[in-house]
Length: 399
Image (tube, rainbow, N blue to C red; front, side, top):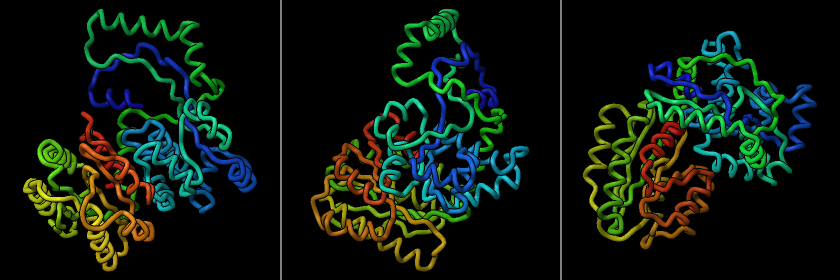
């Protein structure tokens, strides 16, 4: 699918081999749920999973189709379920909106999805067979329902490669076909379910891209997000951490839909409301970047006091705007040393059921993870080269 998308954008892609190791995407459901679906629908396949989600029998979790192969494969399967002759047409779009109304949230990554499933938020989740069969707990407690196209990991050359580079790829493809390589791949759970030929999904590169755009536009079914960004400006954020925070936000805000509502809180020893919640139009975007660019680092770290302020903002906003989904993005080094403590607000956060996504800069990630895990959100380590890419994916999935 990804190679088809590249080709549709005019990028040269040359397939060395269609398969290096075999794999299959699937839905994981526990045995009791499997039996319930089978009894109600007569069979257990992707169509039954979609139907069970629509009627409230099953709460389904899946990963962001803008970056996840399994997530995109699942999205295509859902759209084909509603209209196999025109998966991008009105019938399919309307069906997807109804389906999405029954999805608590789209997971940023597999870890977040699995945690939510273990906590009972999701009744099923998506995963490749190789990961499923290698995990003793999953393979013991869940049944695997294959769906969509196969994930056979083709080897491709992108763009113009030299003769030496092409020869190297061809040699690697030959190695993957050897008995030694196949045996090694088998031991890691690949090359299973070879009898599964894949669903009859015929999608070209442009259609894959259109499906992603359809998802981004309709994933909230017309229900906008109200998000408060809580930004740490304490002395410990001075220098590289605060510069990284500014740069990552500056390069990521273009992935936030303009129909959402965004506000900003900064904090050090004190808490400041830099930007009240408002629709993220061009004016609000300019105010947002002005607020971010003006931040300076000094003082102590009143993280939990700042989160309390964000929760108050969202509580008040949702009273007047009940048709929004509230959330918080906390960008911090995680070293709280002033104001309220975790024990002062964790119960209120849990009761409000507002997810808090945390992004750690030179951070104590354990504290940030504890905050995110209250309502099954995700934590990102910003001390990596791809923090902008990760924030792009996070905002695409949620905003």
